Image (cartoon, rainbow, N blue to C red):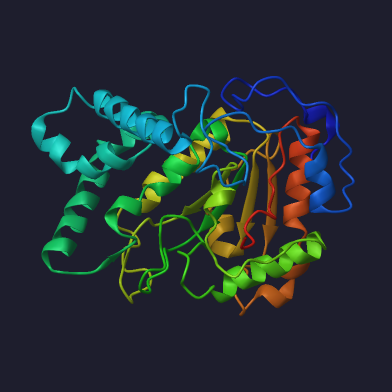
Length: 323
């Protein structure tokens, strides 16, 4: 863990949630005890894990309606970022302009107009023309940008390919839509959490959006895959885009935890600056390797302790269990 000499207040880009919380005891007995003391989340982009569908604002507007207005505003702002492009380029980048969060679009604009990305878009267009089924569905490819904008990132988990089975992938690594069988790797992630926190309650689903909403960026190296064909969209350009995502977090933010599971993720995160971030390494949670140390790696508790030590709200990992 990082020395105290490296601990310092967050930059403006690192946390927009307001004043730093009071000093907290990092020796938690359980997840529950931690969140009795944690500072409440006050931003709209990192809500707590409660169901707020029935909440209303002071003016009587539902939170859902307010979120819809916010998303529409973001779409307009994102499109404004690219107003200098010609119509052909705007058409090529239609998905990005429609679905990418404004903050990430601003960060990634230089990448989205580079030749490699245009070639990637041509490849994806040909896949569609050839009637190939691509996962995740187009509207979900950039869901990670909406759920975890750069100003809110606290933890980065790096995956490889999206799941290539029916209805599995929805834009977050290791996560699957509700109603889909929990993948074995995710089952092992839940087991590791139970080892870290005895009161962790494993959900009956693998839908991890509530983690993403708290600042856990779950990023695949490639953002799409052909149905039933692992790595079918590797080395087509996605890797360069996701490298740019990691580079931005590494250079522009401070006190972020990088969880690098397996050789692929560790190679992807090889350039992370360990003097201002916490890098946690382990074998992959796959059943083929999890028994070699992943289940007892302690990453989830270590991450929360590090966040607390650096004036950041911890992650409530225990927010997924069914009602």
